[in-house]
Image (tube, rainbow, N blue to C red; front, top):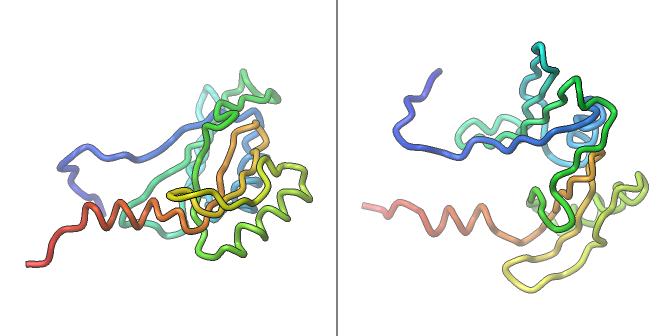
Length: 152
């Protein structure tokens, strides 16, 4: 099924990685993202990750591993720049922080931050990029509420 594009839309963020398999393992085990598709061409390989079955408003994290960069550490999102992922329960932040702590990739300990931030921690992916895990930040809900189409 192809949807006709009627206006510009935000579709993805692309990050380079020195080890695609390691990056995929990080994102699929410590975030809700799953692999949508993988590609290979003359320059290297890439993978598209998104929320499972999120077809209505897909947002994709594109991980790109150029052959020339293999084995390097290519983090761009530091020290505060980050990808944000909201989880449904406060305990999810704590559980992910514990798993990240055990793996040596916890960047910020869980903490309550005044609104609109909420309860957050942050992880570092294998390339050093920061991934914020939040509860009660309400970015998604706020945008939907502010831009909701009024009832007729």
